Amino acid sequence: MDLYEHQARELFKGYGIAVPDAAVVDHPREARRAAELLGGRVVVKAQVKTGGRGKAGGVKLADDPAAAEIKARQILGMDIKGHTVRRVMIAQPVDVRDEFYASYVLDRAAGAFLAIASAEGGMDIEEVAANRPEAVARIPVDPAEGVTEAKAAEIAAAAGLPPEAADVLHRLWRVLVREDALLVEVNPLVRTADGAILALDGKVTLDDNARFRQSRWGEESAAPDTPGAGPAATGTSAGTDRLEATARAKGLNYVKLDGQVGIIGNGAGLVMSTLDVVAGQGARPANFLDIGGGASAQVMADGLDVILSDPDVNAVLVNVFGGITACDAVAEGIVQALESVHLTKPLVVRLDGNNAARGRAVLDARAHPLVEQATTMDGAAARAARLATT
Image (cartoon, rainbow, N blue to C red):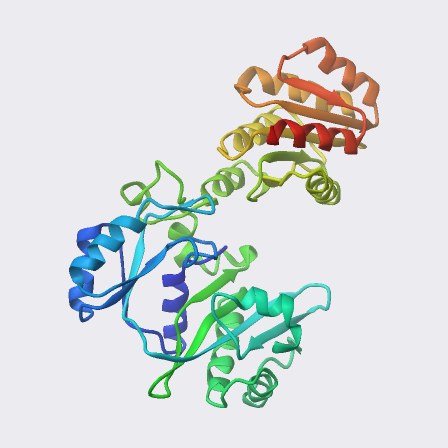
């Protein structure tokens, strides 16, 4: 569960990490009033769960309250990487001398956490990490030991951060542990002209398995940022979460991505392979959707309904390897699902494994004009990619 920037900053503040004063609003006139209370000159920042807001025009400096209202009007309703902006944060500007980067992330492969920090934070941190990896320190953290004051000082020194940043690193670790987080990130962590260390922007991802302990974030963080679900309906802004929340309610293992090919498969490994093959065919996957071992008509209908609700999807690929659940049962599920789901996009189906021939015959007999079959994963991916991009 991702938090919004303003939620992350609220969390940081509760752990003694300094952040600039700010207010969150959902109407341009409220932006004017917030700017008046904050001293006039403010930064207007889109509140969506995605990066690249500054480069997309979602972060603007306003010199006075009237300008804050204008900037908020420009940003509210914007689409940033598929996320519709329904709230903006009005924040006091900061006289920045230096920008740094600091984060902790779960390293599943190593069974530990990883501290990642750099003396060169800001919007171009991805380019720094890609082009000059030596400028980014990566320090393993033993979960049992954690980040002590000494460890925080070690991380700061390795990254070239000022010694006073070690206190922030120590407090960020407390945020990660006590709030059940998988990721905490500050970018940029800044040193101001008067030497203060402030967190200007934050990203926090909480462990979904700890939702019962983190329920205070649930309502706002699960609310959508897509059209038709604005503040009046949900009290917040949000993006791909509408689809993910819908899928979760249906018991589906779904993750929204930013492509054009909707994907349904049975088994996480098969779905991951399908994503790679689609990408290799020159198209981008629109989602990860694993229906697991069961492919009943209701499961297929629910999966198709979620995927077809995504306006970015131009074609759908169903890739199933029959095992315990035979392919003819999967095909029957697809046929029955087509009775309840209005199929508006082409659907490519690849069935292999247990009773694959019978499954193909079931789909042939249905002869839906938007459904076609492929016998190999590569062939199915190539066809779905072609349909989605032409």
